[in-house]
Picture 1 (cartoon, rainbow, N blue to C red):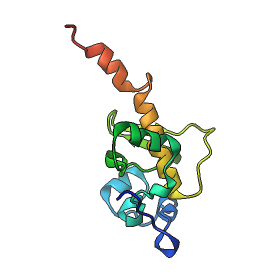
Picture 2 (cartoon, rainbow, N blue to C red):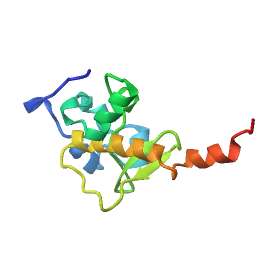
Picture 3 (cartoon, rainbow, N blue to C red):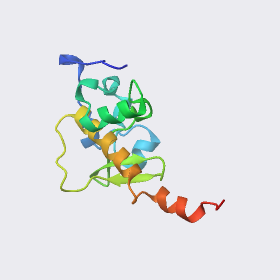
Picture 4 (cartoon, rainbow, N blue to C red):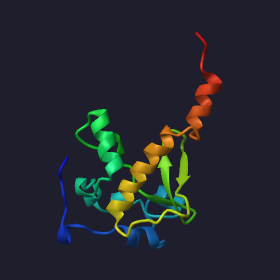
Length: 138
């Protein structure tokens, strides 16, 4: 879907679902206390016009034409705080409080993708400790 762009009335914000606790429909939504936005808005497929410079460089470095496995990464909320779910460590990674979030959901999702990659590459990621603890010599 490289180059796909949604403009004008096609774009619908999922913020109404994130902020509205009433009417949570799935058991997972009830468990986490918020709506899962992409279930409601197919326009959350990444808008490549909003890609961050870091993600653009990452895609070029990796030789990818699209965001591939990152397409389903979205800015979410854990206990009311903005966060990203990291499947590698099976937990939420909260966004630092000093980070200003964009007003647009697409921009927040691009930021989430960038921050997730940076966290997964950092020495603070739990997988680094697991690698050190369980790596076999030889």
